[in-house]
Image (cartoon, rainbow, N blue to C red):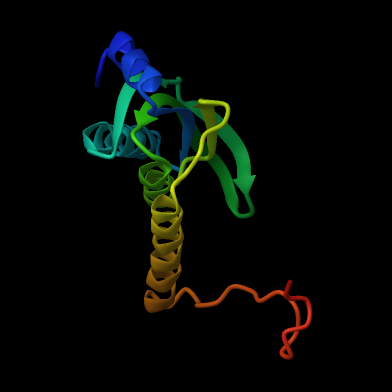
Length: 151
């Protein structure tokens, strides 16, 4: 974890500032707490981002969280971090699966076509991983077979 002042310096130099929320739900309280802690600990060591804030909430009991489950436990962890570029941030989101993310700074930015291409390749790779894991390939295609609807 880095100091907030160091994070502020990097944001001033062009890095992105983001907030992420992670939530875990399980029927065992210890599993929820350990799993969420392990996930955020791993995020703190990921070289693509620098974490400068972390707040793990108290674990709460949840009644009837889903059909067939009478009681479970839920815990949320808020994380403040910075990333050098959007491609790294998208990689973090696809791999760590936060429940929510907010891009705080900057309010707007320019992107080089090479970074946009890298982002598109990151998303494409993710879809191919889903397909190779037996989770399906193409999720949907807009328009019909003749290409109608393409712009």
